Length: 282
Image (tube, rainbow, N blue to C red; front, side, top):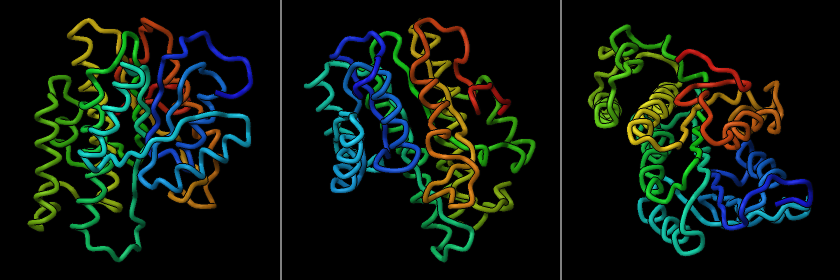
């Protein structure tokens, strides 16, 4: 935490932010440290970069804890889960921020772009969330950093209808994403309706937003006050967004922090897609 006024929480509570050694993730950690009197985990795939980020925040009066986490690795996910079980016996907030995007001119073959991007942005998010779900405490919050680039205007009406269906299940969504990867490998993705620039990133974020809504329906069916939301942080000046973006990282972190700190039993937003703290259609 930072040395400022904080919310009333037990010091045993824990928040986790993935992909947090820089950019929006780092800003989310800093913002949560200022408002949360508990343990805020700054996680990153690269240990040295993660530790440097913690040192940077320490110099600003914040005291997050670092733990290595590669969301594309099931072994890494399992090690982190065991750590949380041993140290905290539960989890209060998970912010799925880790993500990757290949630029339009990147020469990496499309198949590789799709495998890597989907592996982190969708399947990594899914695998981590499912692994940590048994640790979620009452009133836990899951925040998925998605993107406006995952809007459904780029897909066929049939795909759009499937994504937006309130009957869409987790299994059906996973099969849909797996089929997309398979179609790219087979070279038939365009005739299947996946024809757009920055293809891998857009589809991964469509999946992340849809998954947020699917997970919320699952939690609602159990009666648990676990709230899942997705958001677009806007065009932010990061390595991914570039220097011309109009928003600072602190501005990009505002909505994720807002969603992470939603009060108990909030009626809305639940299973929504937001930007600037406002609900948008998907």
